[in-house]
Length: 290
Image (tube, rainbow, N blue to C red; front, side, top):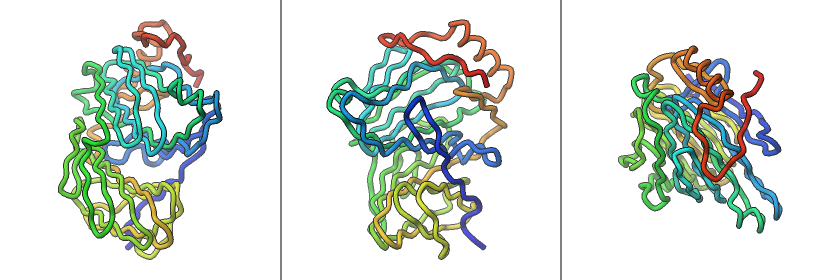
């Protein structure tokens, strides 16, 4: 039997002139462990004068996790945080009962031209924390633990794996690891976490003799060790997962909740201007029609 129980191909999505590859959610699989949303940003090279502009928008009931491979973004939020995020660092923003934020290219990068490549994910919050106070935490790249296994370089972004635990504070048991495989390398994924998946960023992978192209999320069979190979070229792979979702989650636009009624209230609040503003960023994204 194959160790891969589902293959989810990323779909192109336009974020106002900037294309991303969206993997989660999808109709038949809304979550993998702690993760309820997964976008690959780029890689893209912006010409001088161009950049990414994700205008202020609201969230409830989730935490956003930004992790870059290359480039830099400037985060602003309604708590007053202004934080550049660079490659290898982690921005973890807990929305809880409600937060508003923007993500833009920094002015100096926009003027000079720059490259951007990374991952934006959301994780669900446990039901008893869905309405917690909003919060923001930044973790520099040098605080994330690193190790090596069979020639594969590993960085634990969040949660625990390979005998290491990230300092990133999570609300549920989480697996989030960046793995750099050399050509011909083999990555062993143990059965520590209940739900696991592997995302091929930039090179083909092989599992149980079956090839998979980059841009696919491979959902792994639970309860067994899985070996992932990079047979042709060096490969960057993300492992993600963790504890199964504790109750059904509803997702509409940027809102996640175990209660459909709570999402309806968030829609009304955003339209009525009852969410807090982002200091220094007066724009906003209107509530979509559908």
